Length: 218
Image 1 (cartoon, one colour):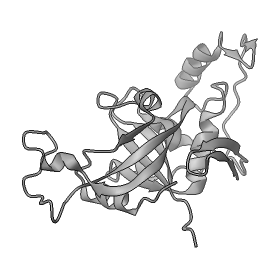
Image 2 (tube, rainbow, N blue to C red):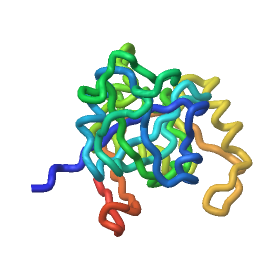
Image 3 (tube, rainbow, N blue to C red):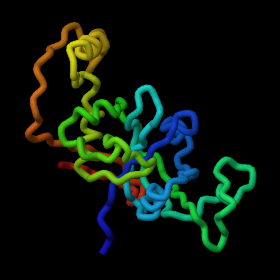
Image 4 (cartoon, rainbow, N blue to C red):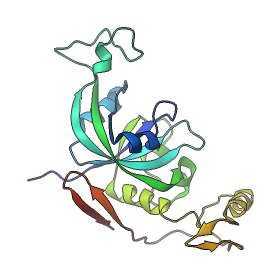
């Protein structure tokens, strides 16, 4: 039986690599992980798993794209390169300490889903990335959380969540003048935020593993 696809979040600092660079390169190895918890998550990944590409220490930090696991965990070659910043003299070829995976570009999100947005979005409050002190560079997410992040990114920038009147004014200033679905925004409607009881999401992605479309619906 084919194991169920799993979903992940993988952090990368923009100074090191970006979703645009991955779109250009097609695939890359996720080298340099030097945290044992994150390393263990890498070793759990399977071909075809999907991950949110998360730009960390960015302005703002948040999910910016989707990648697919193209090669399962194998020893990170950088640990054996003396002089490299990721060299680990305690690691041995016969018993490597650190691992990497290869990822393939799937898509760049229409808009960034920032950490602040994740914290305020119903259904995302249990994600590891929003928990203080629990933010390894590689972490699992549920299928529902993954789909909700994509749903949030697909809102074309016309729907924003604000925690304060000041933030609402900032969002309104950004939205007015935007072009959405061929129409220029001249006015905005501001309403009190209410809990979302149910949100449906549908998307079609290109699945490189099966060389066909992948339909996600929830």
